Length: 379
Image (cartoon, rainbow, N blue to C red; front, top):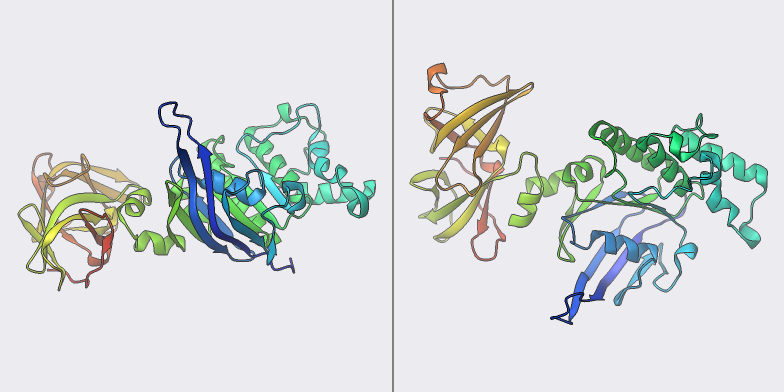
C-alpha cells in the first residue's frame, strides 16, 4: 500500500469505574501509553489476562473512547472518529460470522454497507470478495455456511471479511485462541504471509508469547496497563528490562535463583558462579535461560539431578537447587553436545554441575525487580 499508515498512540489512558462495591474508585486499564507503530509492520501486544492489551486495541479501533490521550493514523487525529470511519479491519477470537449467510455473503457484508461515493458495483464487490478469499485460501468454500466449516476455516473467513475493504489498519484480538495447536501454527504463518503481501499495518493481541515472538516485527510487553518493554522479539528475549519480562518470555521459562553479589561475584547458595565486575554487594535474583547451562564436571553451579528428558533435538536436564525459585531447574542442551558426564553419574539424586553462559545470565534487583547490567565474564 502506498499510504503511510503509521499509528501513533500519545499518552493514551483508559479508566473504567470499579466493579468492587466496597471500593468505588477507578480501574486504570491503560496507563499513559505512548507508542509509535511503524507503517506496514506487524506489532504484537503481549501480556497476561487483564494487562490492558485488548483495551488498547479497542481504543485504536474506536470501540472504546480514551479517558485522555490522542490516536493518530498516518498523521490524522482519529481520536473522536467512530470505528466505521477509521478504515480498520477487526478480527475477534470468536469469529462473529453470520450463521445464515454463506462464506461469500459473509465476506461481502462490509462492502454492501458502503454508501455514497464509496459504493461499489456488484461485479466489483464479487471480485474483491474472491480476491480476499483467495488470499486466505478459502476460495473453494464460497457456497458453504459457517456451520459446514472447521474452526480454522471459519477464522480464515473472518480474516477475509476484515481484509476485503483493504483497511488502513488490521486489528487482531486473540485470533487463534479457539484453534488447536496444529491449526494455530498454520494460521499464524498465514497471518504473517498475508500481512507481508498486503503491507497493512497490523496489531495483534495475544497472551501467547511464542505466538507473538514468531510473527511480530515488534512486541510490546504489557502489565497492568503499562508497556514494560518494546522491541524486536529476539532483542526483548535476549535483554529483558525487568524480572516480569524475563519470566513472561521463554518456553521453558527462565530459571530463577535467590542470589548475592559479593566482591564482584555472583553467588547462588555457596557457589560462586560468575564474575560480574564492579557491582556493589547486594541481594539479587539470578535468571538463567534454559539454554544458558553447560554440564561440566568443573562447573561452578552444583545441583541435584532429578532426571534426563530426551526430546528429539534437545536434551533437558532436570535438577534441584535449594536457592531456586522454581520447583526444578531445567537446563536444555542440544543432542549434538554429548553430555560431559559419566553415564553412571546421570542417576537421580546424584550431583550434576554446570558452568553458565554469561550472556544467558541476568541479574535483577531484589527490591525493584529491575535488571542490573554487568560486564559479561565467566569464572
